[in-house]
Amino acid sequence: MNQRADGNASLPALPGRWFASLSPQVQQALVAAGERLCYARGEFVQRQGQQEVALNVVVDGQVKLIRHTPVGEALIYIGERGFWFGETAYLGDFVIVGSVVARTPATIVRVGRAALDRLLTAQPALLRDLARMVATRTAIVLAAFGEASSLNPEQRLLGQLTLLTRMRREERPDEDPVDLPLSQVDLAAIVGVTRQTLHPLVKALVERGAIELRFGHVRILDPTLFGAV
Image (tube, rainbow, N blue to C red; front, side, top):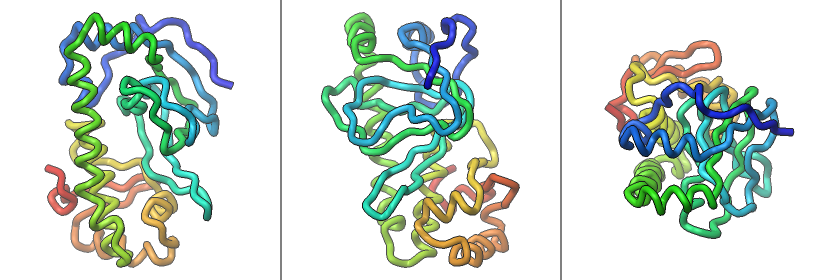
């Protein structure tokens, strides 16, 4: 069961393009409005089908976004420090479309809807900033959808790497090369193919100099191939 941590006063600066775009005053107010929660590995942070009630940011550890389907669990993304989710909480009674689970022991700062409403009253410009986060994520998903939904496994791989690279650029804009915390098993699950099917496709990208495989990581050496510069 998640446990509350003591305060947010010692919280270091958070990475991420969206958070960095906020004024220092809004940054401080947003973090101060939240409660700091600790999750054990495998614990649900939020569950698919429930109402969105809080804006969250990972301040330590990793979380995984999964979608429960009739045929099983689909891995969507792995977020690290600076990854925000639950951004539609300020809009009202939206249903969570995917679960978030602690992939490692993780610490989350959660800004509940009531605290978010108070903050929006005090800092109305934050409404525009939250809308920008929603719009950015929607644009990323739509841009990658064509390739990601292809019946061709190679195009699905390229589409998903495009999506993951762009998401990572939002989370870690200064990271060069882009480093995705994914094993080949994780990547196969995201693409929706077996590891045996994935292996020659990944090998071809390695030979092209587009990616590099490391233990539990995929490094994007040629981000232009995946629509991120």
